[in-house]
Length: 105
Image 1: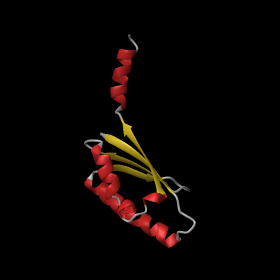
Image 2: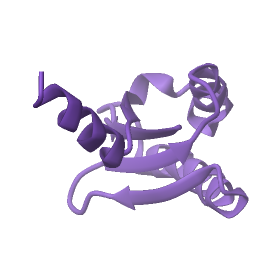
Image 3: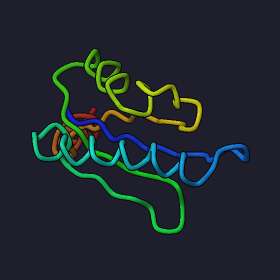
């Protein structure tokens, strides 16, 4: 199944740019490796904001926690600088098929 992640990073006032962007750089390296392995299908950075959208493939919802806790930002103890929203994605054609049934009831 595909999952979309919307990550919003927040730079604390007390954190230097070097520390903030250094952690993000480690995260970027891991993300691009995940693209190469096929775990991550797509990844985008929102221009002008500290936000990222990711579409990744998982076999079960259990893999969501595994993936999240394998990220450098969690391993290094910086999870407090990111808010993540995980959105399960359903193929639209499945919904279209269900609409056919729903519209005839």
